[in-house]
Every structure is written in C-alpha cells, then in structure tokens.
Length: 318
Image (cartoon, rainbow, N blue to C red):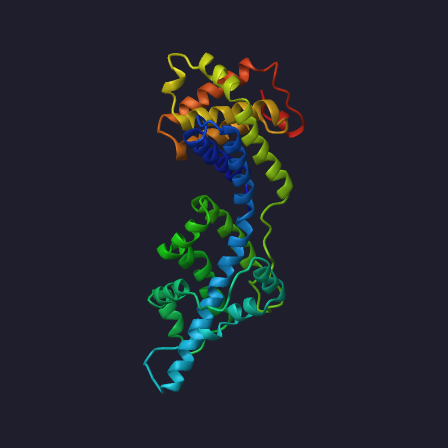
C-alpha cells in the first residue's frame, strides 16, 4: 500500500531532478509544472503495475500449455517432465476471474502471451529449481498450486533481472514502487488461502488516494514556492556550514521537513523529523542522519511560534 514514506521519497526524487536539471533554466516555471505533472502520473502508474504482475503467471500458464500440446503432438515422453503449470488451478482462476479480466482490459494489458520478452521470462522460469520441483510432482493439489503461484508472484518475478528491467523502463520509481506492488500482491494472496476458489480481493493502492495525492502535490509545490525562504532558514541555523557545502539531498530533505512543520498541521513534529532521518539513511551520506536530526530539531524549537499543530499533530510534540 502507498505510504507517506513512499510519497516523501517520490517528492524528494522529483525535487532533486528539478534542482539538478531545471532550476537554473530560463523557462524553469514550465519545467516545474512538467515535473509536477510527472508526480501525478507516477502515482497513477502504480495500480496498472500491480495488475500487470498478476498477468505474468497467466502468460506462464499459456506457454506451458503450448509446450504440453507440442509434447503430445510429437509423442515426446520426457522422464520427470510434467506440465503442472498449465493446469494450475490458482492461475486458471485468476485468468477466468471477471473482475481481473476487466481490469486487464481497462489498463490495456495483453494476456495473449505472444510477446518475446514473456517467452524469455518463461524460459528462465523453467530453469528455476522451485518450478522444476513443482513440475515433477505426479499430481499437484491446491496447496502445491497456491505455493508455486505465491512463489512466482512474490519471489521469481521480483528477483528476475529481465523482468525488473522491463518494469524499470516503464516506471522510474520501480525500485520503490515494487515494494508497494509486492505488499498489494501479498494482501491479494491472503484472500486465496482457502480450499474454495470463490473470491480474489483486489488490493487497494491507498486508503484515501486523493488525500495521498494532496499530501504529495502540496509538499512538492510548497518546497518549490518556499525555496528561497527555506534556504535562508537553513543557512541561519547551520553553524559552521555554508549553504553551498550542504549536499543537494540534505538541503531538499530539510526544506521538506520545514514545510511539513509549517503546513501539515496533523503530522507531529517528531514524526516529521524521524521520517527524514530514516530517508537520509538510505538516500544520503552516513553523516546526514545526524545533520538532518540536529538542524530540524533546532528549527522546530526556533519556529515554535509559527508551527500550529492540531489533532494528531499534537501527539508527542513536547
């Protein structure tokens, strides 16, 4: 599911792109609008990726079915070579599910399995030890089918280099988004954990997508609009540090933190500080977490008269 952490990271990456590419361009205003548009589109792209992941096992079933037919026609008898994937009851259910079929159509997702990339992925799958074990079963049951379907969806797909390359070409944020998509797949798989295949729960991307978009959009626009003001605040509260010596990532994280202090009244100060410390650990230098922590802590105390927290934002703000 889409989290505020994921949204903060998305905004950070787009602000960094803007800072490095567009800020000093003559038509920087047009560029900022373009980047803002990219933010909206990147969020809307996540749901189609979730459904595309669910089509991949269908492609594998289709191709395995073709292999099985060819084997019969050629009267080929290979020892320990079965085609359990072609009759996997979980994948067959997914393929026939009307709600999913409608979503596949809505997002223009082809399940004909004619794409060459799909065939490459399939060949790689057949070499996988887990698939070999599964296909060598004399007769697979519901548990076997569910186990291998889960393995394909949560392990093989997300670890396969070629498949990840495919999604990275579609989604610049795939390294982060795949964690969101994977969590959505997990939720859907829970609904299949039954002997009766009578339901499949399509996972929600967000509890409130419009609110999440509001958060991301305002954070992005707010930092851009307050750029110069925030630069002054940062330089005034970074002892022994010139603004130009602070890394671009750290400056952006500090500006995002300042904006949250001032304009997201329902987010506690400690939550904001901890979020940007954690993001700094992953996306900045080893020393950045302490730097971000120190500067945001100082700013939160000096700006106390300007910070107006309400509701949940009042929690732990001592």
